[in-house]
Image (cartoon, rainbow, N blue to C red; front, side, top):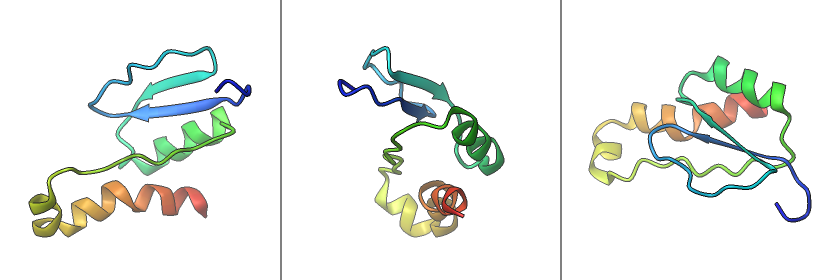
Length: 80
């Protein structure tokens, strides 16, 4: 951020406590892929840091579709 890059931070439930003039924060469920893509393509950030994670390993194992849909599908869709 100190180098002047525009950073877009998309969060769902956990708030982002960092404040900086180059940091734009948006609350969004990235599983809504069209909204996610639209925001990223509109804001055109210099940097995307993918930090989405489901911390419940047992849930990820029992609901692989939800885990994949949360952690992988939105980024794959954006890359296309």
